[in-house]
Image 1: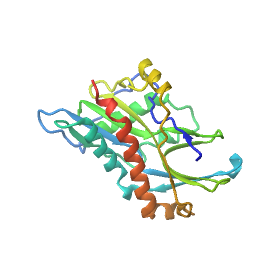
Image 2: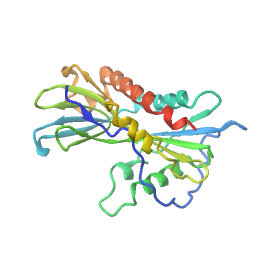
Image 3: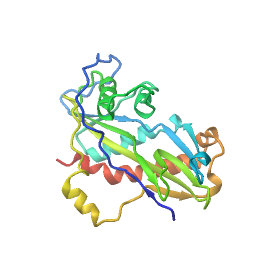
Amino acid sequence: MVRLVAVVFGLSCLASAASAQAPSSAAPRPEAGRPCIGVIAAADRFMVTKIGFTAFDTEILVAPIESWGLDELITARVRVAAGAGMTVLRLTYPKNAFEPFYDPPSRPAPPPGRQLTEIVRRIAGSTRCRRYVVITASPGAYAPTNKTIAGVGVYQNSLSKSVYVYAHLIVTVFEGDSFAIRPNPYATFQSRLERAFVPRRDFDREIDRTLFPASATEAANSTALRNSARGVVTESLDDFLPAFFRE
């Protein structure tokens, strides 16, 4: 089976914190006297990729999947990883909030770390949680080509016609008071040494090739793709989220 060399774990580049934004009056408030974790899930795009022999043969569609409930699913998996006694809030945000992060304009953009910090500050508003857990798409290299596949989606190899649903996600944790990015537990020397002797896990699942959608609309309306995507997202989050809550 063709496997994906996925960069599942990552940490946005550290940079200076952006200036504070005006608090949002619509932001949810944590329960009094209890610590809270704010979850910002930016996984509401489903990528449909048909990988050709060349870059010109590759087709990519983006299916809107707000109705699939992936943001709620991600929040639920964070709640499980955080454990009892912790209030976990899903923070909502405007639909275009992450466009500058995923699709930066042609003009010079801020470094990714600072750009993500600015977005998180605006979304966090006045919640004042202890920490903010942010889930974004992570680019993964499709072997043996140099093409990248990111986030949650489905792809088909033009040569083998095999079809896979995948989840390539990054967890970034911010301190609630300073919005400083916390160290990535998978970026330590010990963690890298341990992973050197353990085969890398790929979060892709082969599905029936007849399920590959012909359009973004067909993808968004497919119950089979929805269920497969939810399954692989759950598997990946349950695998790597717990390490971010060990202190």
